[in-house]
Length: 276
Image (cartoon, rainbow, N blue to C red; front, side, top):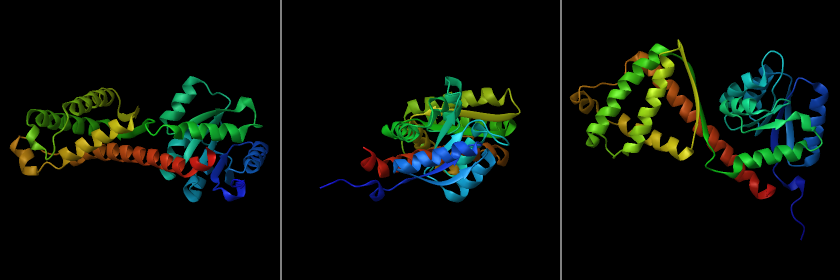
């Protein structure tokens, strides 16, 4: 009995973004011929890429780096925001380490080098996607800001006091919190303070293992469940509305990063049986 044909497989829906119309035609042809991909839209710059990502919700965005109006690196975080389930691959003729780190830090799952030509485009794209899916423990990328630094400092100072109180009075939370997790919290708080003290606007990006992010989220949820009266008995209170601006930015950034990570894994689980 023969295996499933390309027509029987579920195709990966791709948005192609490049300011060169001739190259877009070739990319569409190569991906359509491969059988695993379906090009559902084309954009000629970052502005169009964001709008089409929002409207079409593609599985994959093949994103050119150098374009007018809005570059690929500028569009990347916005695409990840409006289409969190999309796996974005930056397509560039300058695929050096600096560009690679900037792309991953902005939410891309991989970087492809344009200089190798388009003949093997579908194969290289599938390899880039499979590499990014292969390890469920691949890092979560979190990016925060810009947020006013005075709001960040207000929340950081107050949270430092809460973390110190939880360390001194471990029974104040409804579940015990690992001291090593509290150490990690304090490391982040120190790093955030250093950024907020030197700039008017707080902007921060980092990569972390999913397990580590989930441990921090679970620990903070336990602290967030501390009753107001118990907190006040320790001489503490929750942050002011100004400080909560930063808390909301951190919360949204972490949850968006986890959602993007889970969406990528879900796409992998859906496609890997047919891709091998």
